Image 1 (tube, rainbow, N blue to C red):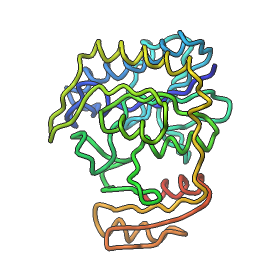
Image 2 (spheres, rainbow, N blue to C red):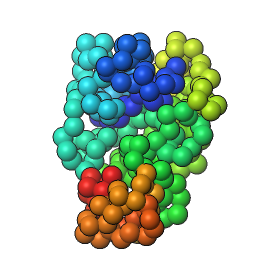
Image 3 (tube, helix red, strand yellow):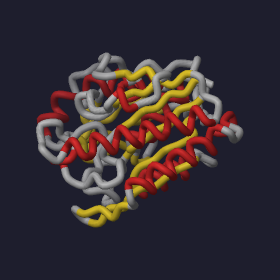
Length: 265
C-alpha cells in the first residue's frame, strides 16, 4: 500500500492558542513535538497495516513544522509549499491507496475550536453547494478528484463529526473539544495510542468502500473579512461579487474550483 498523510496542527491534542502554532513563539516547540508524534504514530499504524510507501505533507503554516528525524525512515516528507492548486494535498495522485488526515480542525465560524478557520483568517465561511465546508471537506474532494479514498481523520470533535457525516465508515479520533477560547483535551499519550490503533483499523478494512463521488456541479460561496477582499476577488475570471463581503463562483470541474481558490483566498 502507498499512503498519503496530510497533517495540520490546530487539531493536535493540547493546542489551544495561536502562540502554540507559530514558530516564532516560545510555546510552539511543545506542540511541534506533539504534531510530529501524532504523525509518527499514524505512520506506524499504516506500516502495521502493510503500507510500503508513505508520503507526509506538512500542511500547517510554513509547511516546515514536522521533525523528520522522528518519523520512520521510509517516510517522504513534503515540506514547504509547491504553489499547486492541491495545496494541503500536494503530490497526491492516483498511485496512492488511501489518505489520512492528522491534526485537522473545524471550519471557519465553528464554535468547536478556538482556532477554527478555513485556509486563512480572511475567510468567515466557505459554502459548497449550500453546505459549510472545512479544510477536511475541501481536501476530501481533492482526494476524490485523484480517485483516492480518505479513510482516517484526527482532530477536534467538530471536524470528526463532520467527517463521519461526509464519509460513511471513516475512522475518526477526536482528541479535543472546544469551549469558547478554551479546549478540553485527552492526554497526549492516549491520543497517540488511539491514532495508531484507528489508522491500522482503517487500512485493514475495505478502504474502497470509502471512496466518494464528486458532485456534478460546484457552487462556491465565500464570505470574506471585509469588502476590499471581495472587490479584489471579483476581478478573477468567473468570480462574481454576490454581496458587500461575499463572492461566488461555479464549475463542473473541481480542479477549476481549486485553481480559483489559489487566487481569491
